[in-house]
Length: 395
Ligand SMILES: [Fe+2]
Ligand SMILES: [Fe+2]
Image (cartoon, rainbow, N blue to C red; front, side, top):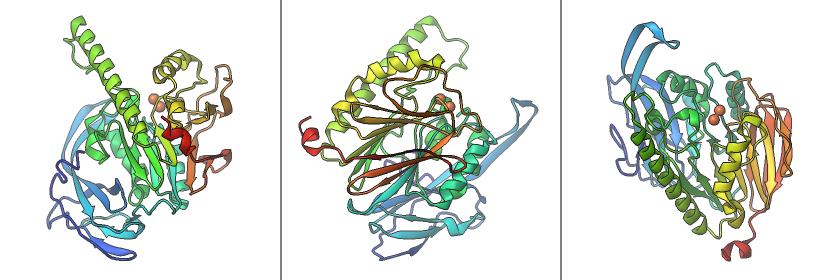
């Protein structure tokens, strides 16, 4: 959803506000007689003075027989988004959207405060399977102690091209996303889906992007990259070669953007990076491809003193430390944590064949990371120090 260029698909309300605490915002986005809200509302892209409220209404439905896979009906949605500007930093706002039949008491968000104020974020990944009980348990756990932000490190859905998968994703996430902005990361199962770009209102090009919060800098990368449309039966060998060149070019452009972005934030106290594919691997069938990916990144994480890199894809928990950088791989794939079947690496600090949620509390002096399974049992716990400022300035 390209919000900055064309802020609202249906209508936009720009609200200039200077209130103090817990203001009530009546969002003027739904007209009398409009379709009821089918998905959302959910909050996106919360900054110190701005936020975006999104929701979807059903715009069409077709029922078929026999089923395609397991789906007998396909729906299209109109996505609505309203950009709120002029908000006050560090302030909790409630909001309402006419036609919302869900839990309206959960519709509140807090704008970012300055760097002296601590904040938190949670990281999950691979929520991809429908009827994913682990995903629902993870949401319940996060609802009990809401973070300020949620990152999902890819494979949000089983097949990004299926609207039924996105409907299930929002059914599971719904209550949490009313008040917690979700920063999505592209995974291989998300398939560069148009639904990904329609549902989410993310910074930049929404594939790879960055933003600041307090003294921390956040960077999201697109590790699967471009997908060739595989439904096209008339693809020739020349088409494949041309696409491979385009894919390589896309990767090079992204890497240059990543390095420039890191160089542009020498004073960030913390830098957190999120991508789908892990940098180290304990899954035998993926060790080779992971080694290739790590070689492509080289020492960029270490050179720029990145604080921590979060990933998913392997469906188990694995943390490594290399050159002072923490690499954390985890996720909730629906009761299907994969076994660890490759040799433990010299960089490995902790590993467990469990589904996991990472919660990071970012304070002025250190960041604390607590990793639990979806039942709340402790998996891992560690601290992250602020980046050495003199070293980063020397980059
Ligand atoms: Fe996955
Ligand atoms: Fe994956």
